[in-house]
Length: 484
Image (cartoon, rainbow, N blue to C red; front, top):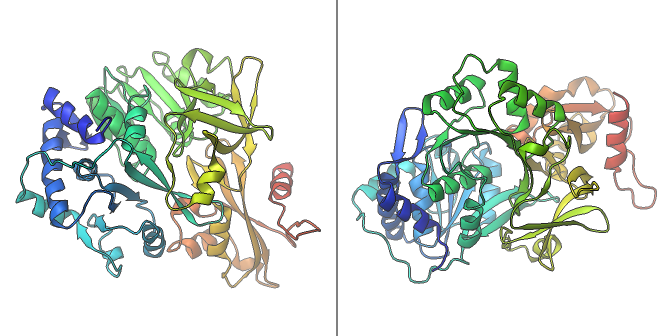
């Protein structure tokens, strides 16, 4: 037994049955309802043949319906695998197929897109209909152990092949207890979608603290600030790009006096943004959080240091040991680390070495041991907290009729951390057919929107190494940044 996600829900329901577990708009789901509903769904899933260790892919928009499905899968020892709601049908089928799921659960918007998939499928309405006729008694799974896989999060690999980050019940319980997942004395507004690790980590932190989590499904400043005022929330955690929109919009028109924590992270956080948050919300503290799906929290820059250490992501988080490899790569060791990548032993061995997770980020330490991220060791980029593999985007663009050659790189950006930039050698006489809108349209059904190019550069030739002919991505970035 040990640390199990289902027990977080059960204990919260026993202690605080009438406390909201989550809200979305006018909808409210209490802990008592979450526990009872997830029990019924667990029995319904067993009736569909789902057993301990089976992978269940969920594809949908953020909704209160998703929470009892998540808890039900955990209670019977199956593995919850949330699929990016922004995927087109072809990309979603490819990524989901990698997990070899026993079942696909989809919401109303995504059910038609999965119509041709060759696997067992059920939509939200069908599943809840089956649950209505099921028992609300707690399901028992004798084989369930805290080291069993609990969630499989899909992320981009450097080769363009998807990776499935496997996290156990134990790891997710420990992450939920890590102190940054929920305000133990208040409530949190969550902008992260429920296909994203951050959204579920915040949900599990709320379960552990037995506090409400208030979901907002847009990055609209009015929606976010209205949720803070309506629920008298005490914590707001936004990525830098969304904080910029909120600050530009103006905070004064909403009552945010209950906020105590105005936190940020997941991508580069300019010192100017931190100063702006402090000026706009002087009654709050701000913590910058650096982490990943694979490692959970890595470092924290706490409020007393956010202005004293501009550009830093702080020191190792509680329970984490951090060091720099000889190459300058940031490595972390903790009980929060993933178990590995699903059925990718080589990738797991590359990332996890002697108990250390190699992040792929290059770092520098100052004389007080505070970390700054200075570049990437792996050939992936980070935009708005999401990981993008350049090869995956290049593959989607390569058959564009006006493109002779293409290389995709990440260009530093104060709002998004990096932006996806397509560097294109056009077919002779067809350069006029290449711009951002046309390339994004070409990617629409192939890639999630955050992977689409936000910038296009036309060049006569791609720089390559003489010996191997490899594209020199670093040189491309240097040239683009130097030309500003």
